[in-house]
Image (cartoon, rainbow, N blue to C red; front, top):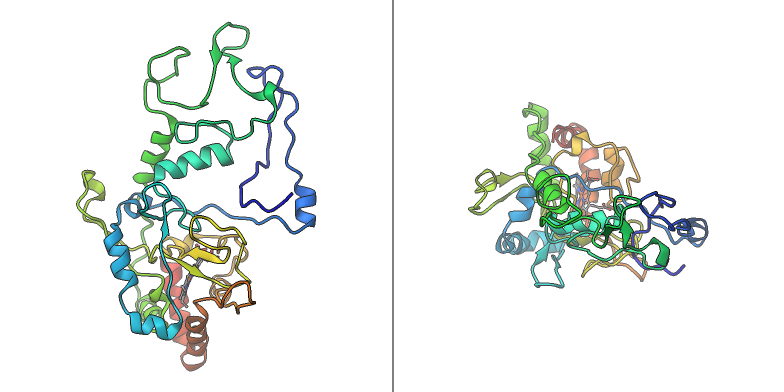
Length: 326
Ligand code: HEC
C-alpha cells in the first residue's frame, strides 16, 4: 500500500439483509501497512464552540497573523492559513485546519469515517464491489429500491424518511454549531499568574487568546468573544511531530494551533494522542529539522518555558494550573 494520506475504514459490514449480495467487503490490509510504517493515528478534535470558530472573519485571522511580527520573528514563529480549493477562503476545522465549515466537516466524517454517503459526498467511498452498490430493495423483499446517497434531506419522495426534516449533515452541523464553548473555572491567584506566564514565554504567539465573531444572523453567535487560544493558522512542528500527511497547503509536519479551551478536561493530547501528560504535550512541541522538515516553530518558546521552570518554578506550575483551568 502506498501512502495516500487518506482515512481507511477500520470496520466493514457485510451480509446486511437490506444489502443482499454484499457479502465480501474486506478490511484494508492494516497489518502490512503497519509493517511498512504506513499508518498514522489521529484522535478527534473537540467540537465545543465550533459555531463561533466557523464565523471568525478572515480579516481578523490575517490581522492577528500580522501582529507582534518582531516578537514572532525573534521566536521563529510564522504560520499561515490553510485555504479552500473551492473558493480560496481560509479553512479552519480539523488538525490541519483542512475543513471550511461544519457542514463539510460533518459530510466528510460521515462518508470517510462512517461510510455513509451524503449530500456533500454523494458517491459511495468504495465502488470496487458491484454487489455492494445500490440499488438495494428497501424495505427488504419489496420492489422499492434505495440509491445514492445513503443520507439525504427528505424531499417527500419514496422511500419516505421517518421524519420530514433536513438530512443528517444539516442536523449534525446545527448540533455542533450550538455546542457552547467549555467554561473555564473561576480564576485563582495561581491561574491568573499562569496566564501572565503563558503570555510571557510566548505561547500566545500561536495560541491567540481570543477572536470576536462578527455580527451574525444567528443571535447566539453574534459579536461573541471566543476565548479559543488559537490563531487558526498551521505551523511547522518539526519531524518528530510530522504525520507526513499533506492536506490543502498544510504540509506533513504542519498542524493547526490546537485551540486550548477545554484542554483541562482532556485525556489525550496532540493530534495522535501521544501523551496524557500536559507537561509532556508542551515539551513535545520541540523538534529539530532533519532536511525533510524544518525546526518546529515552537522551539524557542519551549526553551522559554523550560527556563521559567528554573528561574521561577512556581510560575511554571501556575502556567500548568492555568491550562488545567480552561
Ligand atoms: C509555533 C506555534 C505554537 C507555540 C509557540 C505553542 N504551541 Fe501549543 N500547539 C501548537 C500546535 C500546532 C499544536 C497541535 C500539535 C499537534 O497536534 O501535533 C499545539 C498543541 C498544544 C497542546 C495540546 C492541545 C490538544 O488539544 O491536544 C497544548 C496543551 C499546548 N499546545 C500548549 C502550549 C503551551 C503551554 C505553549 C507555550 C509554552 C505552546 N503550546 C506553544 C502550536 C504552538
